[in-house]
Length: 94
Image 1: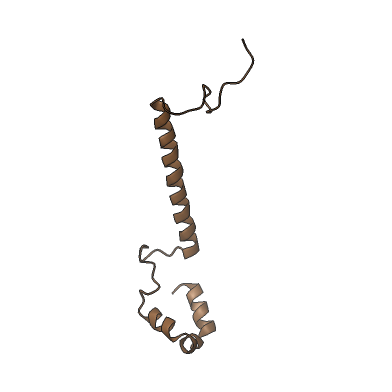
Image 2: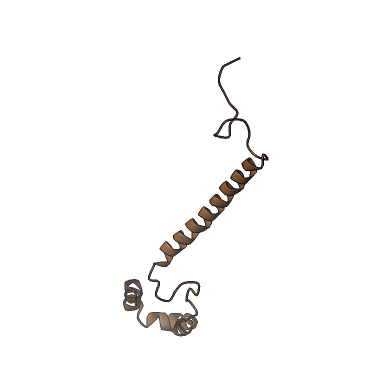
């Protein structure tokens, strides 16, 4: 049992069982509050897991966008000018 769960159990004791009987019964079933998408031996705190999942999701979207941009440039459909940074060439001349 993780330290956080032990601490809550020590502080709450039977108060939770009396005050929240349905939640107590569901908790006893062991899968009611389980995070089924996680491995059983994954000890990563849920807040850290959520941050990692959010980062991975955002990174995938970013990389998809970059891949789309590169494909569009390669096919001659994208870009906004002659500069390598996507901006129109600036500077004097003529």
